[in-house]
Every structure is written in structure tokens, then in C-alpha cells.
Image (cartoon, rainbow, N blue to C red; front, side):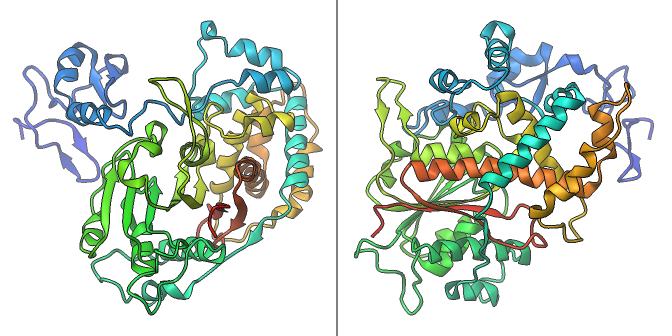
Length: 464
């Protein structure tokens, strides 16, 4: 015991078994250090390194070769789908109250940040006056009431997915009912929209008639089991899995065992993916899908598939891939959304929602999923009834926004959070329609299955 690190591991109920450093009671992993000594790795900010070791670490970082290899790929283009912090033309056209302050706060000299953290959003909300907080809630209620009227329940269970529902697939594949229900309904909604067609009774669907979808691109693919179900139930020729992280227990092994199926995993951030430059995707019609694309990943995906992209080498605008046939994205984690990445700033500015109010709205969205979802929440059509109570409180001189938030009931917070989520997603829906898609925004599974249960689906006009 004297030769072991003295750091106590509560879960294992023992001391660390590593050898301590010289003249220290702890090993290298557990030696206390000031946080200021650690800085994010410039190659991969997901891990940190001691400042004095930075120069040596950069030369031997395990991810260095991966990053170098990625930058040589023709489909890698740094920040191609990121969007812009400000669109000057939109700001000149739509100038809500306080826009002058908004512009000054985004001056490069002011040190503005592209990535606004949740803590920063919360502090901004708490620094508001009570009157401004109430006005913002009233604006959210009004906007929600005016635009969020046609969100339909669309729980679909297509016959083609019967082998998964009946668990007639490979038993080695992971099966969790809540995930299977979501995947089934996503594919069912695509079939209902005419994007997918069942291959029941056939080896696979007939793609030669021009109506089939031989390829699928799954964004934020993770382990890839949404595509696994699509391949099992509908038959596809090509699979592209876009994911920036590395996962174990992926569906790749099972997918590679399928005859005549070509699989390519693109380990890249969606922000940097030029889909037009993926050589093997240029000739085939394809379907873009994503299950629980967190925060700005939804905006990055829409821009990747539908938005104009600027080529860095010649500064010319490139058109979107004309072979896109349809799109389905289950959104989530709206509290991570960023003004720079959001796909439809024009829509928000038309509604009188400023950049700062957008940050507040995204912070409110976290309230939608922090309550106990074991009990059914009231329908958001009754939201005004619940929020009136917080608007009528008597406030003393020392009564601030943080006190109001602290005294709100869980159901009030959840209702407000769901309203904000829908406002953000309705902007995305309108953007999809402006870009020519026959698009819908639906509730695709009950909230008892997942509180993140809304789906953006679209059918391209070039699909006969």
C-alpha cells in the first residue's frame, strides 16, 4: 500500500493502484494541479494538455495523423457549412429594437464568441430586468401561437419494418424498444411521404425505374443502427455514415456482410463536409437522414444538403447535389444551438427576435426535458394558462429574474421550453420549404418514448 497512489476511488472503494510520482503521494493521473496549467489541445479540443508539455504533445497527439489525413480528403472543406455570425443584408432589412447594440457586441474588437455556452446564456437571462423577461415570454407566446399550429401526430409503423418489430433480425444486433420505435416511425414517415418504397417480396427495391433510393447518407450516425434498419427493411446499394467521433459496437460489421452493399464511413464534422465532393455519391440518388441531430448539427446538415456552398479555392458558389431525393431529421438538444449556425436568421429577425433573445430562447429549451416525463405534460395549447401565473407575481425591489425562474413550477418551465423548441424548428421547416422541399414537421413518437420527439421530413420535387 505504501507504494501505491493515495487517491481514493469511491466507486471501487479502494486506492488507485498506480505507482506515485517521485516526491508525491499521487500518480501522474491524480497529482493535484491548478486548472490554469491545462489548456485544450489545438488538434482536438476534446482533451487537454499541460501547458509546459504542449509543444511535445502537438507532435505526437494520437489524433494528429487522423487530422492530417482528413485535410487531404477532397470532401474536407473547413467551415463550409458553418454559416456566418452575421448577415449584413438581413440586419439592414430587419432591424429589431436593440439591433445597434447587437452589432456593436459582434464587432471583432469586442471579443465576441461564436460558441455561446449555456452558462453564458443563463447569466444573460438573469441579468435582464423583470420587465424585459416578461416581455420576452409574451413574445415567445405570441410567436408560438401564430406559427406553431399545424404540428401533427404521425406515429407510423410500416409493414416493411416488421422483421425488426418482431425481432427476426440478427440476435447479435442491439435491440432497445424505444430506439426501435423511433427508427421505425422515421422510416414510416419517409415511406408515407413517398420517399421510400417497400421492398417486400423482392430481393430489394427496383432502382432502375428512377423512383428508388439506392444510397443513404446518415448524419450524426453514431453506431449507425438507423441505417442498419433501413438496409434490412428497404434494401439500399450504398451507405455513407457521417460521424466525427469513433464508436465501438458499430453496425458497420453487420452492414459489410450484406451482399452488394457498399459502406463508407466518413469520420468528419458535418461543418466541414462538402457533400458534392464525395466522388462515390455523385451519380446516385440519395436520402439524407439523422436521428437526434444535436443542436446546430441539424442546421449544418440542412446547409450541407440544401444550402449554397462557397468553394475556398475559387470563391464560387456551388449548387447542391441534384441527386438528393428526401430528408428526415429528428431534432434534439436545442440548448446547444448557436446564432452563427442557425439556418434561418431572416425568419427570426422578421419575428422581431434578436440574437440575444435567440440565446435566451435556446437556453429555455433545456427546460423542456429537465422535468419528470413519467407523467404526461399538458398540451402546449394550454401553455398561456400555465404561464399567466408567473406574469402576475408581485415583485419587490430585490426580486430578480433568477427568483422568478426559481419559483416557476416544473410544468411551467417545460411548457415554455417546448414552445421555444418548436419556434426554432419551425424556422428550419420554413427554410426547407423556401428551398423547394415538400416539407413537414411532425411529432413522430409519443413523449413517453422520448421527449425529443419531433421530426423534420422533406421530399424533393425531382422525385417522381
